[in-house]
Length: 200
Image (cartoon, rainbow, N blue to C red; front, top):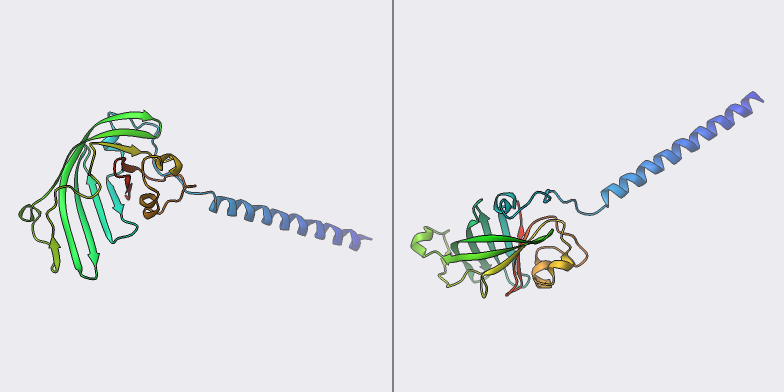
């Protein structure tokens, strides 16, 4: 009788341990698949501190071609940029400078910005380029044409909201789909529907 009771107790303990382990495994799987985590606290972002709080490095990529435009911001809205293109025929690039001002809050996920300037440097100003790379001098940097009015979307914004002002191809090139939520800042030119994603 005692042996039978002991066997029943051992079996009950084994079942409890198995159920507990399954529960922990399910919680771990849920945690691992709960979607992207927003790493930036945007609750305290205001018109006054936007440039200092936002990400400083941004990339615009082409979905169909091989070029990229990269920006690095300072805390006063000024930026330095480069455009690169690598093809079978060779490499080309140019550098530029510019600035944004007048940040204005539209809602909890979006600010408007005014583009003050975006000027391509001359070959002399840019300095020496890598061997085999052609330096181009163009009027307007890629991503800055046709408007002075830009939008900056904050982390936590849905891609569906951004798609009203940015093209799907521009968002897909950054690795986002329509069902995603941003985990970075995104700068959008609504006239060309091009989107720069924060990368730092």
